[in-house]
Amino acid sequence: MYSILLALIYLAFISLGLPDALLGSAWPVMYPMFNVPISLAGLITMVISVGTIISSLNTSRLIRKFGTGMITSISVMLTALALFGFSISDSFWMLVVWSIPYGLGAGAVDAALNSFVAEHYSSRHMSWLHAFWGVGASAGPYMMSYALISRNSWEYGYSSVGIIQIGLTFLLLMSLPIWKKQSELSAQKKIGHHHLKISEALKIKGVKHILIAFFAYCALEATTGLWASTYLVIHKGIQAEIAARWASLFYLGITGGRFLSGFISERLGNRNMIRIGLILIAIGLIVILIPSEIEIITLLGLIVTGLGCAPIYPSIIHETPTSFGAQNAQSIIGIQMASAYVGTTLMPPLFGVLGDYVSISLYPIYLLILLFIIWNMTEKLNKIVTQNAN
Image 1 (cartoon, helix red, strand yellow):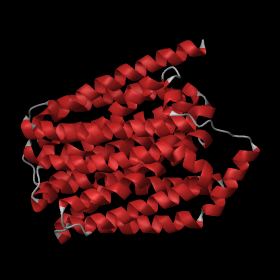
Image 2: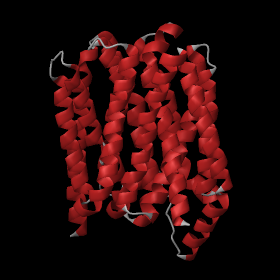
Image 3: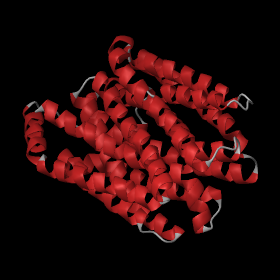
Image 4: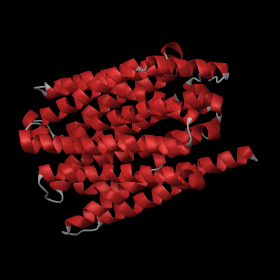
């Protein structure tokens, strides 16, 4: 039964990743069509993130009432509806409206499945789980690139992903008896969770540090993915269709890195995996900073940055029960997701404003600042957890 659920969770995370890179890949073509500034891509991601924050903060309560399987099914269905909505949008404000159900669906499934895997599976599976998210995030730009080249239609890219989401929704609905059985087994083992309010969680030592780290990490990852194509087009002079494909290399680096992390994470431990990831991100961003007309250098920088991002998210999530107690993990993971999405909401749009009014060339410098914040907060958390253990 664990194997069946794990396969479904992997499929769900592929589905979760597929739409994430679509906007960044298509935006160089979309914004002239809607006659809006480049920076308004940030408004769409902001609306999506607000929805994810709301659903993440309520996931623990919803799971206790409806179960992980039902919440996951409904969430995927909402994202499918939103993607079809994107594909028929004929104005920018329609995109904004359809961003609402997309955000609500994405936040709930993310928090629910992360909590489930952190509780029931090893760090190896947590890494591979997020690798499957990377499979989706890497495939999304390729699907959009195909839609732009063969159909000259970004709308086709969104509708194609929507069809895949509908198929997954049916699979998840059919699997509800398996989720129910797992819930009964957990009850027999007396696996319980405390529902913590935000104010209660913040009183636990180290929680503030991990929330700031998660804020900065997801800000870094989202900003990198959203603005990579635009940076390549405007600053490097690469054609939009090619840039959309190259931007996927960042997600390809994340995906490959997470598959590799699964083989070594249990040996090295979550803390060391985070440190290694941050060092690789620093190397990748420095490479992107190098002023060179040799395009392969920028591509290598994106890949190395993706490799560095690979272990950080799953390692932080999987370490949560160890750092703050298994009974608090579900609530804290939900709050972590919300903090992460606040970073996703605020920081990519902020860079869009900087790109508009200062220069898009600030892209790698902006990311390096976020990197420093992550390093500082995770190292402080490690000291707190070590002191508490002693």
